[in-house]
Length: 221
Image 1 (spheres, rainbow, N blue to C red):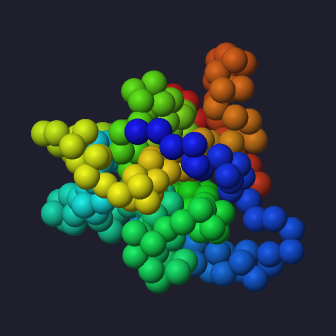
Image 2 (image 1 turned 180 degrees about the horizontal axis):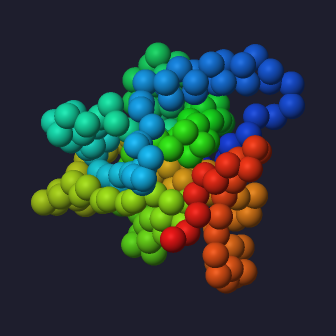
């Protein structure tokens, strides 16, 4: 399930200079979306909920339906590039193209920062990423103080489902997985000012995060 035309086209979640109108719109949308989800109660950890196993375009919305069926979709902010694209454009995620990557990532990254600073739970979809990449994402979120959970979509013949997709549909699904992984790792870097890999090499004994007023946002137990 490889494609050379991937999320590598956009290596940053931040807007380029001169896009102030985009910045204003993203700020407004991120605040609006964040206001729709409550912060977790003091003493509780926000949840990082991860959907795995989505292969087809139908699976992309199956994850969302799981939360609706459980009655808790309103408890999570979505850190998903396809959801951000739909909010930004009003279009279906099936129309997502390479030209939409940057703006969609910018909105999703802004939502992620709201989630961390406001102690709100997050959901995302990593589809069929390799196991070591999933472990990396879950470990990063644990280090940011999140409780983690994995919800798996089991396909009885995932390769057949993948082969049934058009080239463009495969591009969407493949890039969704990789961009969403990057969004989590960008969130980690945006919060701490250091990449996940760099922090692991540093082997710090303790980790604490404070806001600009010195209030503790997270501290390892």
